[in-house]
Amino acid sequence: MDADPRQAAQHDEIVETELTRHWLTEGERLLLGCPPVRAHVGALVAGHRQVPYVPTRATPEVRGERPRWPLPLEDLPVEDWTDDPTLGYWVDADHADRLAVRLADHLAASHGEARVVVTDRRIAVVYPAAILAEEAAEEPGFRTFEERDARELAALDAPFLGRSIPPRPVIAFRFADGSTLYARDVHAVMKVRRASDRVHAAR
Image 1 (cartoon, rainbow, N blue to C red):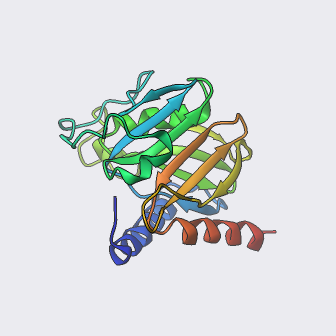
Image 2 (image 1 turned 120 degrees about the vertical axis):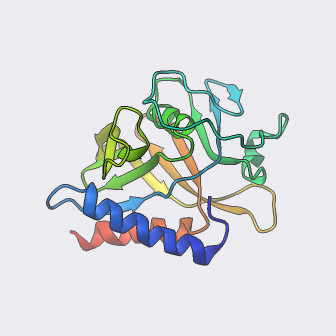
């Protein structure tokens, strides 16, 4: 998770270049590619708070030992999750089968390496192939999971959350099934605006 804006901008350029070169299909336009966020996931699913969130379904096996990140605060109110630097994502859903939860399963289990990608055609979570146990150690490119039609993303915005001064910028992925995935990102406003500009430029 990049807190330094300059470093985050450099990583954003790398992410966009790699996804364009190794993941997009012919004629597909990248709208938003998230960087890896090496932090825990928090969740409020069907009214049950889970911090850190533990995946509810099978996910791909990744190489290496699970990171020994500090644990989130136990009693932090849900609305203040961005004030805990150990949390990189938050999920809000009324049922464990919602899309935000399915994406969060991968984000929580991938040692911080999986990331969310949105294009004009699809939304998915992708892993660098080289980190997957079933792949060759130096396998190039990305592997795709939970791929859905882009129309399942009902809205994309960049709210400021938490009680810190200033509040923290996040990317909010709001899905048609009513669930929401929040991703901490220092350049959230710029990335959401850029995604919107790319949508309008294609029309």
